[in-house]
Length: 465
Image (cartoon, rainbow, N blue to C red; front, side):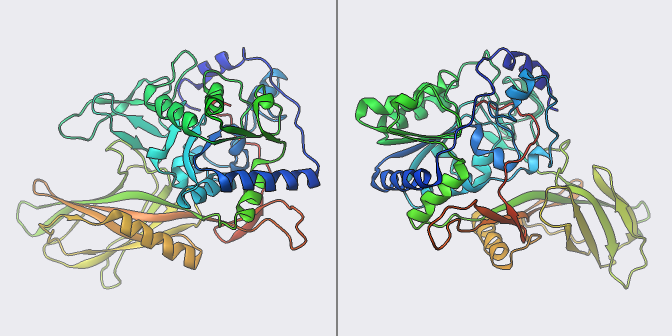
């Protein structure tokens, strides 16, 4: 549980109109509405999507006003469900990835989200085309220079408070702050201004999985009406804005959006997660210069005190010609200290054992070790390497592919820092329509295992509706 989350619940409990009834359009009506929505999207010149908690329920993150939502369970005095996976390993679902597909096709111009789960950014939605009105649980920002840091762990504070880390810009170094708003915080202009701008420009604002009750965010879609734009609402509960909408669809968001993508003949791209870590090797000669004292560390790229949340343990072994003792590192920081003969070359094998929520048990990385640290730094084309890893993962449909993306050399103490990128999850999405045109529940395949897209109960979250 995040620091400050219990305090947030005290504000939430006072919000009314919880536990709203869910409605479902009849199958035939639902199909007709999906086709109608697809036609609106196809004709649109400036499509804006406005998302709420309902798009993430299929990702294992509960909503607020549904029968098993956070606010509903609190009002009924029932315990909140336990998370099936760590929050930092939640994966984008059908809707998140379909929106990425629409953006890549040039149809979707902007996304406005009330969620703080970070799944839009994880999905690959460009930051410049996204407003996160209530913040991001995985984002820190520098209040001085404005640099944002998207973490692989949940930031420990909420309410725009200072965190334990500083800006990495050498010219700055200011203390970072979390980006998640508390109830008394105003919506940040950095997020609100572009959201308002795009809503005014929109000819279609598509509201997905939101009850449209929290102000002032819920009024943003209405700004499209003045310019002749249309509002479409896809939600299981009725909303206060239904009368303003040109089309209201009561159905599971994933099912509706998957149907739209089929109608538009667009593919939902796979979700492939790439995580980063670094291997740090530091060495020094013994006093008699016969031995080299060296330290190997598997560490986070997010600061010296940050953990690597997707690695549970590291098993260290050496090439068969060496008789060095193997080691099992099961506590962070993952660090090994050894002394070996000067100028002796060998290979170190690191078996990385992944945490729950990753798509494979682990992977192995081999490190040539000759104690002749290179004097050259490497700054490779990260985007090209990421794309190559994603292509390989999609083709092979398994995780564990890895590559070096950066290498830095420090002269004193003699240190080599190598940053690695590694594929830790892959999730693909199949067509949801049968040959007779009937709608069935969309399925996805996660790391080679096909799973039915059922709504899951999960952990309480601090995101807005």
